[in-house]
Amino acid sequence: MAVTPTIALLGATGFVGSAVLRELAARPVRIRAVSRRPAAVPPGARADVEVRAADLTEPGETAAAVADADAVVLATLYSSATATWRIEDGDTAAERVNVGLVRDLVDTLADRPAGPRTKVVFTGAASQVGPTGKAVLDGTEPDRPKGPYDRQKLAAERLLLDADARGVLCGTSLRLPTVFGPGAGPTARDRGVVSAMARRALAGEPLTMWHDGTVRRDLLYIDDLARAVVAGLDHAEALAGRHWLLGTGEGRPLGPVFEQVADLVAERTGRPRVPVLSVPPPEHAEAGDFSSITIDASAFRSVTGWEPRTELGEALRRTVHHLADQTDPAAEAVGGGRA
Picture (cartoon, rainbow, N blue to C red):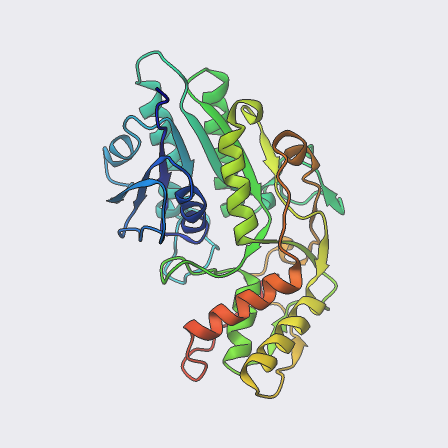
């Protein structure tokens, strides 16, 4: 009789985690959905979903969260008071989440008795490679991260892959590009540049760029990202021991993307189209804000068969309509400009 696998999903109410939960819930598996606030079980779930509310930064909580799990998805992300991904050097709270939780997981799995290695999929960031001077990244570039966020993500990834090399676990890291799309709830808010611009347009604010609009981003829709993470679990043994880049293979100039967002919002609301403007960058802007990124994910595709399915225009339309349904345009104006 086949044994139903148990998958521990850490960060189940976050933007990425909630999308992975939806994808996994369509399968006949057991899911332990772990997050600070209780996760909502997706409608029509085939999976047996155990909802566990826990603060994973507390002693013993990570061990309890992954107890008896055959696989773990690490989709946790530190949330600052300003609700952005940016952190400062020396931010110990961010380090505790971004690095410390991986250290706790490795220590927990190292204490397990001999047996099949637990599969672990970690969600990293394409930006953690640092400046490369290359127009297209394929995952072979040496890592030289600059900002504290990227340094922390790289440190966590190295902990995981070192544990794989020592036989503690079966681990792989998926480095994410710019991911966007509808969130599954109020705690799954997309904090990225695409949704930030859509919120501004819905609030009647101009869309501001810290450059001339030619900076490119590889934009991956959230549903396609969730399928990639699940593909990572399905092919964990073949992917183990290294990082893999995810992306569409096409870098989109952000100026035209923002123009398209402005058009979609005007079409949805019936109000005049907001302008797209170039503005001076703020002091906290980083070099990566002005670097173009296109991802060659052919290595990951060749192993897993995964590929993105959602056309950019349709993905932007879904995002705008979701935010229009969720947001009172008169009440919220979202600042931003991060590329």
